[in-house]
Length: 461
Ligand code: 5AD
Ligand code: SF4
Image (cartoon, rainbow, N blue to C red; front, side):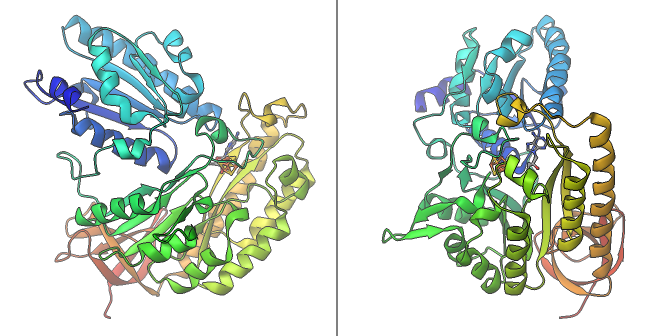
């Protein structure tokens, strides 16, 4: 490996630049930053400007058809760019990483021969080696589930020149999913559940804090399925992990996403009760409100199980706000099934939510079902659901006007002297804060709401 680093770092007179485009979920955002770490060790600087990049990486998402389509249209544009660059005698390498890479492998190069590297989510630590091969004129497709632990082969996350200072960071603690919801490609693209060991997670968290990070969001496709062992070999779950991370000096805020209702155990609910550092915000997708559809989705819980669970969580942490994911138009969904989803949303009351039309994913059991819902019905249901969810989101925001809360300042605002912070409930908060710095946690009073953010003034105490 050391040899590789030398050979790759030497020839470039000017630092090579990499442009990484991230599609999809937060796991991809995390993976992109770790790919940037791996490439920084090879002398690559990140750039936001594709025109100055010699390497373009698309970190892709396969969750819905549209997400995958976007990748191919971006590749079409890159093909043209590559032609021009090559004619000018410039280096221009195109890499496809992430879930489309994993799902489609060599097919990507067949469709888009300009692509040099196809690398899956489990092998991106091998990116430097792949680049070396590309320089010898080869193409690389690496989508196996690596036997080695990629995290052990990645350099530590560090401050990278050209990357803005981060006070919030993602930390992947778990990958993959064994739940096999019948609509979902994740168990196929990301593989089965794997948890990172405690020591590795603590080390990464300490490193992030040393780099100025105040808030860490633990990530996993099924994050609350995380399990590990403490130093004495005793089993741990995500709740235990949160208690341990809360002891790491310098961590001011903790979050985690995405969870499955089946894995919300008592210890995790206790963590919400006990840990002030754990933000009172939980993304807990239910997907649908009809038991018949939940069964067809293989969710392995009923609507009433979900509402009872939310009651327990709210009892433990009364100020907790909920977020969720919903799918409308799953095969066989009737008007009555959809109304059950609407009722569930009314019952729970979400602060935020994501909702989608069902999208058939090849290779999933859902794709075999025949009673597909017509597109116009899906469109109409989605519009109704989104209207309700948006209303709940605005109601929640408005309920905060006049209240005080701590916000973590993340970046300068658009106006001079203004900063943007994050509320405990993940909302952006604009505040006039001339003397304050990014990374400060300040106490504010909410004065007003905007379409996608809150306005606040600094409050005493
Ligand atoms: N069609 C529509 N939405 C989907 N999701 C996952 N698979 C599909 C699909 N085939 C949604 C689920 C999941 C979120 C990340 O994406 O709501 O929770
Ligand atoms: Fe997909 Fe279901 Fe696993 Fe979530 S729990 S990643 S929706 S299979």
